[in-house]
Image (cartoon, rainbow, N blue to C red):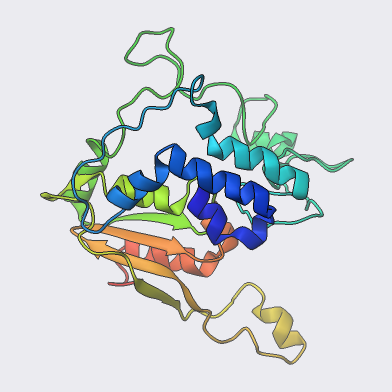
Length: 277
């Protein structure tokens, strides 16, 4: 959490006192030493669990500490895309930031009667996020709610990589729901095709040369062509033993929404239409 805030300090705009508190807790709670040891290439060994007691170690819940503090500074802040500012923009799914927001007189697209009918969907109130569990039942009996399947890095994901040798994992640099270094640490704790983690640090740039097709017509009508050229370096890629890792710059959680050209290249690679991103 703390390295992410430090890297994006201008987007959080915390004062020096709060930043000092975060840094102190980052070390006191053991996060700094853990990251220094295990977020390395190649990894030294499998990572031991970091047990967290919410009663005795409540001060170490740095995610919620940051989450609660930042809204005082930016009420339109979004943990899915931490560079968003006010005003709240309208969204057809009524979920423009971390908050639900539906403009007066508007309808949510998937809750429209004609859309439900076209999709043959049940006539229930639709919302992008719901408190109702998606998975009911599981290994502990029918009373168990939630996803109780095994951690994917333990069995399922390594098998998929080994069977296809063409799996892509991506992260947006502005995503605080799934933080880039957290995903990398998971990769460094996963064994596939005979080795643990990546042996080399990801550092190959992603150069997006696709022109902007979405807004190109606007500029053509005005006699300008500034969007005809390539986008440039928009991320980092790394491939080892069947697994491709990509980090997308200037993107939040929903990468095809925030950086469609980069996401298009990711899909091209996944479909084996290009050897590199």
